[in-house]
Amino acid sequence: MLTAAWLDPVWHHSRAHRFFATARWSLDQVGLVMLGLVIGWLTATGAPLLIAVDDTLFRRSGKKVHGAVWAYDGSRQVTTGQAKLSKGVTFVVAAVVVELPFADRPIALPVLFRLWRPGGPNKSTPSAWPGQRRARVARKSSGERTRRLRPSGVGRAGE
Image 1 (cartoon, rainbow, N blue to C red):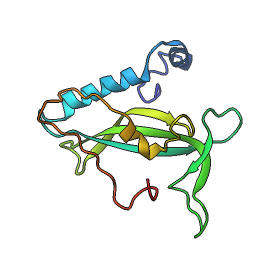
Image 2 (image 1 turned 180 degrees about the vertical axis):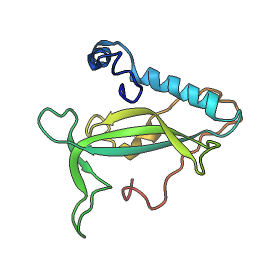
Image 3 (image 1 turned 30 degrees about the vertical axis):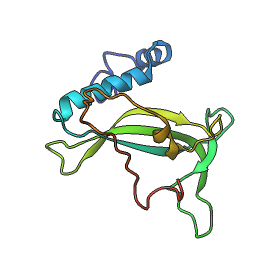
């Protein structure tokens, strides 16, 4: 990123490493600020706000990989009858879907994410998380409704 921004002659990359390793900030707060910016700049006042939630598995393995578990991998190509499982870390991502004037289709801008790990008190699955979590969104008026849309024929059967 420093090279793309033409900052590599000015900044040494260790400066960025130090910032991300020692700074005290919350990814949730950064995500909520991003959500506010997207709502304020890229959506029309009073327009419905569509939040897309999806889980993504990044294939990783090893004893030192935090949160790596065997999980469903929808992108894995297997022969008929084999389970679509891979070892890795699963992130649940919330993105705001916006329509931009220069794009011919809606674009999802990720604003919040969370590492999913199996187990816990409710032994939930990643697809069950949106129903268990509530989010407060700016500009919520009394006339707005919250809708829960499920994709048809996509994802894990029965979830």
